[in-house]
Image (cartoon, rainbow, N blue to C red; front, side, top):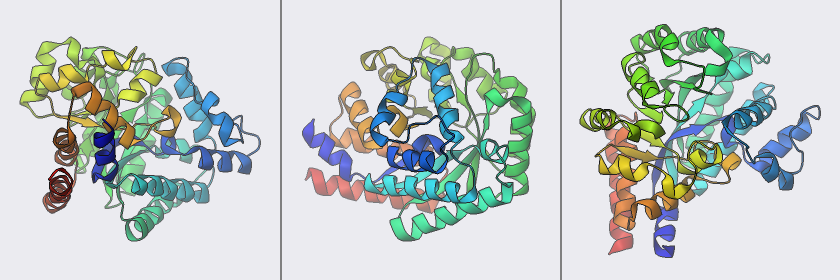
Length: 340
């Protein structure tokens, strides 16, 4: 396993399910908390591990929103975004589709134009200075209701930067049915954005069916409960609809009891296109390299098998054909050189 871990560390990778605020490192969270002393978030990075220990999914959302409250102006947004890219570069992540929730910032008073300019400025700097290409998924925070859906759609369509590739739906699933968001996804899809809602993380397979039929999902965020429905697994496999699997996240939020019970094995056995992701990495004490190591253990993969997971992410991404070919070639060259 140590050989596989070393292989993972150098492996060029893409990440498809990782949240903007949820990727704030302890150092950055502590720095932002010090800037905003009225926040209940700890100011000491050493105490953040306890703060990020979640009782359940509802408690995770509570803590997540406390961190969201630290992002109060465009400078905070730019700092956070660039530092996320720096952490990605250390892991040899070449390309990431970062899930961004504009509504969380605009409702706190950051102008929408300033928000988009801040993430775009950080994106350009990250690509030039760090070699990390970022693209955006603007997502609706489902717990904030249809007001947030309308605002997210407006920002996405009115300010649509070239780097915005997809439209998502996050937050709690219980009590937040997917079909009510259909009109907003219809508008986003008509504008050329891809549909990538969360579904089936803390609810059953019907939520995933709703995401597929009502929101026209092209990828499913999490999809943990898909293994409870053989017909759903068959549909996902036949239509090559990827699942964005986040193993450690599912344990941290109590969506799955233990890693050994994680359904990733059943997903792969059914022929579903599985990608591995970190979700909210510092909050869950993980990163993409660790998630690949978890997946390698659960799926009993060697280095070549792990490279296959990396190529799954490229295939499932919204990179253009040339971008996919380039990153796949880089993965193949690295694998050939390190396994010879």
